[in-house]
Image (cartoon, rainbow, N blue to C red; front, side, top):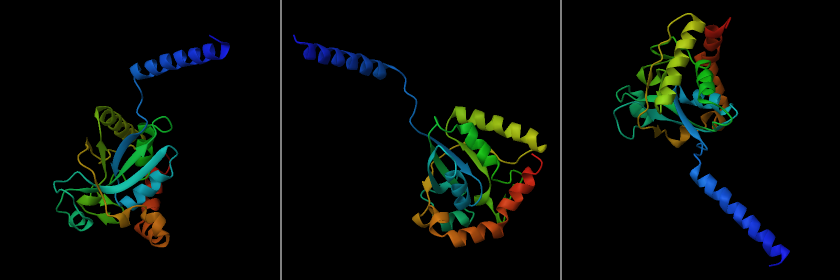
Length: 201
C-alpha cells in the first residue's frame, strides 16, 4: 500500500466516524416557526421582515372555525379567524423570546376591540403558540410586559391551529404597494399609538 492509498483510507475512515456521530447526535432544527396576530397583517409582516434571523413571513388567517377562509369571509367577522402572520426564523440567529419582544413593541396590547383603526374580531391581537415551550415563553413574556407597562395586557396566548395563507395580493403588500401601504399605516395611527404605549419604557 502506497502513501496516497494510506491517506485516502485514513480520510475515508475519519469521514465514516464523523457521519456516524452526526447520525446519532440530536440535531437542532434548522428553522422554527412562530405565529402572531397583531391587527393588519400587512404591517405585522413588514415589522418582522426587518428582523435579522427572520427567513420569511406569510400573511394569513388562523384561529377560526371555517376551512380555507377568504379575506371577505374573515373580515365579515363570522369565521372566528384572525389576520395573522406566520414567521419562519433561524433560531441560531434570533430567538423566539426576541420575536415576542418585537411583537409586543409593535402592537397595542391594551386594545381588546382590534388594533389601531381596525376594529373587529379578525383584528384582535393573539399569540398562537406552536408547542408547549412557546406557550410557556409567551405567557412569561406577557407577565413581564404587564409589569413593565404597569397594566394588564389583553392579548391571549392560545394553542395554534391550522394556518391558512392569505391571497397572493396580500403577501408582501408593503413592497408591492409602498405608497398605499405607507398612507394606510400613517392614517391608521399605528406607529403613533405604539410610541404612546411605550413612552418612558
